Image (cartoon, rainbow, N blue to C red; front, side, top):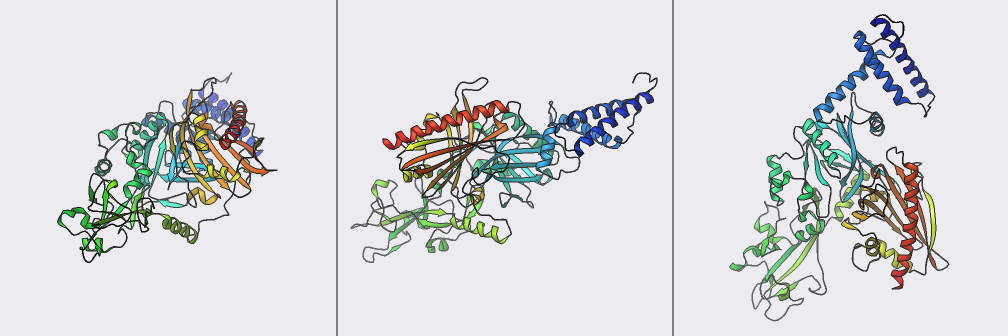
Length: 593
């Protein structure tokens, strides 16, 4: 700008420099030059445009219109950040471009506000991924075991985002995103009216609260009449719900506890000493038992799952519990009912016998006896038919299906996960079938179990182990079974690392007569840069010359760029190798003892 005596001359010089930046950027994009400093050129172009606008009040040149729009967008972004109370500003240009690539096409004038790690629940499976908050919509994507699921919904189609009471064992913040009454969105092959999520970071929770308050008019902690009623029904006062969910307990949300409360008792009384016919209880003191279908808590009560509009006549005439649907895992689900049989405390039809409707189980017998007056048996809900129905619906409505894969890392090479065969370990003459049973067992944390010993060595705490999932959601794409695990584990001493970290792990097990595949994908939430990558490990067990051989593959999938990438990859692979050797030693000792 030397020699320029007035603002017009100075602006012309700046405009030439800005046009040169634009030309270099276009040439780099045309040549697909990945080394070009595109972000730096864009920043310089915008800064020059700011000065030119100050000098002359307008922008000219080949990039004038585009630069003017970018300046307008930057100004709007600053105003939005101010309105949301985000002093650090909105997400970087790099993160915004990544968001636009994932959720293409981007909306007009859309700007990414913030993105962070979270879990979203589909049926009984928790998908660990990232949530993206933009000026126009809220989006989520997750890739687990090579299967990608996502949803995207406009803010105007959202009704509320509310904190929920914490589930026992959960250390994150539980939320429910509810859509408006006339709106559903596709998520994991189903059209849903709401999505349950878990956020792990306080700052992320604050960003979500600010966005909900700004775009929906009510934040995470606001209560409406319906919300208050719901919390009271769950046993949590509205005042307590204002606190972060980590401090609010509601053990009834636990699946196992729900199944206990959903058990329905069928009760009957003998019609008389002579006839011996069993019928619905009829004596005056039978009270709630006269309804035939009861629950047993402090006393016998009419079961809470019975439809409120069901007549007494229809209730007592039913041969199975007259409850066609049950609210379970966030939605009303069709169910059938099965008698619970136990050879130790009931006869072949599940009945128990006594003189009266005692609460004490010790006063009941597994067979009829002289003078018996009453009997009872348990029924439990089964959701299998709903799974078959949902699967058939997907086939009939055109959802794409494909042959389930036995493994992600071995069968698929997606180019993102750089997997390598780390090592081979000889486990010795370990019983192959027993090893498969250990991996496929439901109760991993029962003392004496192989997996229990593994997690004990890890000093696992705050454990939340999900049920095995088959033939639904992500498990439809994989042979075998899938489950999730949340826990806190001890870390070996390392610079900048805490003594423990929260971990989110997904397990996939597939066993045949000749091969066992145990795959995991995991993320550490508290270690430096832990949320920027996931670790994928595939252990393949086969029998070679009478000995079980373990082959471990390890891969790292990067979710964000990271200048520590090389160091972290070396550390992860070293730890994975050590872990495989320790597990081989543990398995040998387990089956020897």
